[in-house]
Length: 469
Image (cartoon, rainbow, N blue to C red):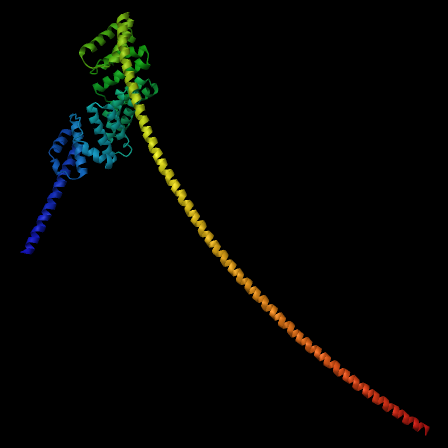
């Protein structure tokens, strides 16, 4: 019975684990399918995401994945949100631990929310931070979107150089992935920016790229014809403008701002009646248009027809609008300078802190090095003293050995001298003995000589006696 209970408990535990794992894979499967459908069918992707029970999402990464996909679905289905409630889990997780693709997407949709709130500065800041991840990013469409989003805000900030450059970056990526529709739109926007800034070389280059598109729908043809007219108005001659209008390559089209270029073209060609009628039509249709350009064209028309009073009023309005734009640009620039100054101060403080840390480390290393150097010197000094003492001891022993050897030599010399003295004494004693023996022999010889002399005398006497006889 006990064994059966254990088997039942183990089986239930396995079922619970299997159910949990199946549940997790089910939720993740829905997220993966929604992500796959996001670009082509954002409505279907949103329906899938809405079917997920958020309470069943496990882990911060899965919650961040859901938050990012839901924010993408809302934006792609034209549901503008001004709250970070949906995206916040993705911001909290991906901006710290996400891949370059995940960081770029999160920054992009964070910027979109700031745009919906009307905070253009924070929106641009988010897009720029997202652009920092472009190098290692593999999601080309997200890169295009973040460049285009930056370009849009730069246009609103009247930074037309940055507007042009970002559109060119986006067009370059579109060309790499063969997304011709997006590429053409980005090139047209870049063309607009280069014409506004008066960069003829860049404008010619972009215009050449635009002319390479063989198949264009009517909307794109209208856009291109409008910018060809704008190009002629900025850089061309009257004949070029006249040719564009006579060949009917330019019309009002769906973009009301096209009419401003047409009105300006007719003004340049001295057809001010036609130009004024176009401007009046634009003012009456109720569609938003570029009021500054409208006023500048109207001033030229009124001056040419001799209505200087209305021209002056229009010019005052034009000047006021231009001043407001310049003020806005100055405030943006001043704000950017202030923010840059704050960033520089923060960077300077951070640099000083790093310098203090570095110099502290260097000081610590120097102190440790000096301490180690002193210890090495002390160690070497101790070793040298020990070696010196050892050498002194050895020298002392050598000296003692030498002294002992010298003493032994002296002792040997003394013994040799004593032996020589003894030998000399013996020799002297021998000589003395020989002298004594010699003296004794001499004495004996003298005695013998005397005896012989006496004997000879006796013999001689005897001989004489015989002779006498």
